[in-house]
Structure formats: C-alpha cells, structure tokens
Length: 244
Length: 222
Image 1 (cartoon, helix red, strand yellow):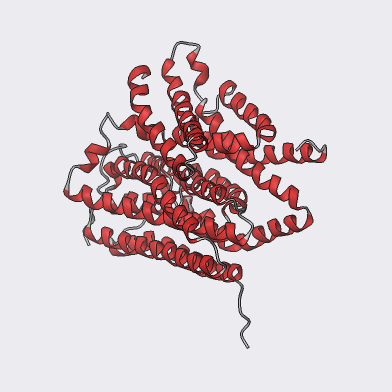
Image 2: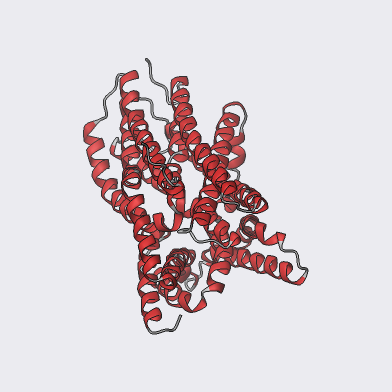
C-alpha cells in the first residue's frame, strides 16, 4: 500500500484502538457506578462527581487537541490522535517525535513522506510510553495492598501519608510556575505570566469558597475547580497581552 | 465451587486483563504499520533516538507508577495509565472528586469515586479529541485552535489548574505544606531547572514531603 501520513487506513486503525480504550473506561465506569448503588452511596453525590469531572475535563481536553494540531504538521492527524488519546502527554510526545525526526535528518514541521521514517517515529513514540502500561497491571495490586497494610498498622499516619503525597506533587507544580522567575530581575517581565495566572486561579477558588460560606451556596464548591481552571486560562489572555 | 470475588478483587482481575490486552494492541500498532506499508524502521535513526529518549522516559515511568498508583486507587490507576495525562488531568480530577465526597483513595467509597471521576474524564477527553479530529478533517478548526488569541490560554493550563488546586489542599495542611513548597520554589527559582523538568520534580516533591511528614508526625507536630 502506498504510504501517506493521513492515509484512510491509519484513521481506521487508530479509531479501532481508541474505541477499545473507550470501552475500558465505560466498563469500569459502569462497574463502579453499580457497586456504588449496591453499597448505598448517595446518588446525588455520584451525579455531582460526574458533572464536575465533565466540566473540569473540557478545557484540558481542548488543550490536548491543540497538541494534536501541533504534531499533525509533520506526523499527519492519525498518529498524534492516537498518541495523545492513549497514554501520551504533549511534552513527552513532542520530545519523542522531534528527537526521532532529527535523527532521521528531516525538518521539524515538514510532513513525513516515507513509510520507513513514519514507522521509526511510531516505534520510538510507542516504546517511550510503554513502561507505565507494563508496570500497572503487574504492580497495582501489590502497591494497593501495601497502602492497606499501612492503614491497618497506623490509620492516622496512613492519612497523613496520602496527604503528603498530594502536597508533594502540588508543590512541584507550584515551583514549576516560578521556573523562569529569576529572569524577571533582568527585565523579562513575561516570566511573571504563569505566576499571575496561578494567582488568578487561586483567587477564583477563594471567591468560590467565600461565596459558598457567606451565601450558604454549597453547590458552588462542586464546580470551584473547573471555575478556577477555566477562569485562570481566560485571564491568561489579557495577562499575556499585557506582559508578553 | 468458584469463590466469589470482592469488588476490589474483581477490579484487579479486570484491570489486569484490560491492561495486558491493551498493551498488546498498542504494541501491535507500529507492527501492523510496518506490515501494511511494507516498511521497516530506519535502524540507525531508531537506535539513536531510542538511546536519547528511552532511559529518561522509562525512569520517569517507573517512578510515576509508584507515586501515582497509591493516589489514584486501583480502578483509577488501571484507567489512568492507559489514557494518560495523569498529573495534568486525571489525578487532579480524582483528588478533587474524593475531597468533595470526603472519602480516601484506600476506602471502597474512595475507590469508587476515584474510578468514576477518572473514567468520566477519560471518556470526555477521548470524545472531545475524536470530535476535534473529525472537525479538523472537514473544517479549519486546527487554525482556530492555533490562533494567537487563544494560544496564551492553552500555554497557561498548568498554572491555571494548580492555583485553584493548591488553595484547596494547602489550606487544609498548612504545616505540612510549607517545607515542600519552599524547597520547590527555591529549586525552580535558583537552579537552572526548566519547565520541562516538572515531571521529574513531582516524584522528588512527593518523597521529600513524605520524609518531612514522617518527622513531623513522630515529633507529634501534625
């Protein structure tokens, strides 16, 4: 078959694979929902969990789509569609693809026209993300068992343990927001953009919290995270125009 | 007689079956590409690229498995490691959902809430991306998404996400949060760490915070 980066066969293959991945999510969703009803969990709570997850996901999902657009220039649509729908994250995939394209001595942003170059990129991208996929089925049960044991030994410590994990991760991302901060002192004020965006999002979260308390509107806390996320992203536009 | 599995046991069983089947399918993809287009990889470029990217990806992959699985719960972990975008989407989504429902990842309720939120998030992501790809084939959606007006919003996704999230989690654990926040701020501000390194710094932050938590706990401060 003659190769093209947007060959219909590629679309079909990718669509089939993504459909299977989608089926897995649906399967686990149905199982968890049924079990929730079985053990008498509050239906309203489940509904809120679902709506909040939907709202929260829209903006990041669109930004993943932007990643597909960026990679599609050299790789066509189907491969980035697959790579970013299954495991991939934009930063990893971009590095894997551009490193390989460099080694192939092709120009970045130039459409790949040879099948063997395309297969090379596909293999490197696939092998790069395979580790979590191999380890998760092997280790999840053991790791969860370890957490359970910890809880049995010392319940209070096991709670602190999980909080410490979240906080450790969140601190790393807070630090990341300041990664270019030192260049502010040499006059590059655009390095303040992520800092101000983060503050806007934090302020929005605080406002939601206050609103919930003062006006007794508990419902808003369920949407506080999507509100601060989308609000922060929207604020990024004027902030970037101002400082960028 | 067949022993009846508990919910959690059946999640592990199904997670393994789905996980290994998907692993096989994902590996089959480049293989089938080679067969239908009758092409082999360019081995020289392949091996050089593999040497350049794999050691780091695999190391990060191993560390991520150990740091994220305890936070995600079982069902959440089986789904997240297939659908990806864990730190920037699935994990914040699950953490937020569990916090609202006032449940912990290692209880059955927490397991269920985490699985539901991650499954919904995965389904919505997959559908939006698929819809976007279809629209891009027939319209100029690609150009709209890349427009200069919208670009800053997508560039600032992570700061916009973690600002709100930090308020929720830091305010509840101020004592425990101070040391890791100071460490990460100084590391990112005063060393040549760039934005690309946040994937590696997240596990570093987790381990550091666990150590601090242990010390504070032993001293009876938290």
